[in-house]
Image 1 (cartoon, rainbow, N blue to C red):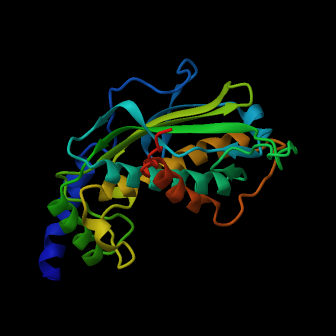
Image 2: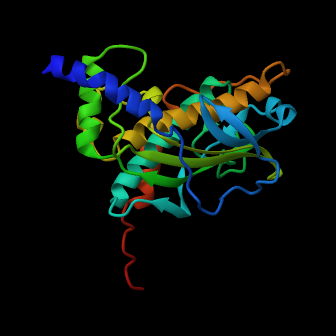
Length: 269
């Protein structure tokens, strides 16, 4: 079995490498502005991006509400709402963790004054808004073959069968206290061979072979693109350094669960 997989690996690698590694979703933007976006490249992917170095350097605390699904997102049909919420959870956690590594104190909920009117423990410097612009499911059968090949053919690049590859589109922006855009990115990608797709471990469990496995893989790729954009913009600046408390990014599961929890019925007066 493994010998057969190795025999098939080389032509599949060649074919996979010849496929486009990025995609696009022609959907209306959710960004507050696109005027300052410029063409860029993030880990071999073409993107549109903008960053204000001086403004970002002054930010230490960021409010990151759960990632949303854009109102007119281009999403393959028949994906259950519960699975879309799984994508939102993964993206929210990945973006939170990446911004935390970039030196921010990330808050899943806004900091507010208490009931007695005391001042909040910390003032929010900016808000991060991210939304899914598109999703393409992967073919479960070809994803399974790709992952078996990844286990059978070790190396820095993981082979992908160039059929039925999933894709994800996301856009995000950071707004300052006055609502002005200080960073933004429009990003979309297929789970091409260099992105990490094709490898599975026992820790991945059954989700590694679902029709959203590629999308889940790409979640961290987007988070890295946003984090890299911000980190590069702050590099060389006299930045405000903050720290996200351990376990903070795990809060998105409960936050999204609370959104979809049934509301108690009101008793008639």
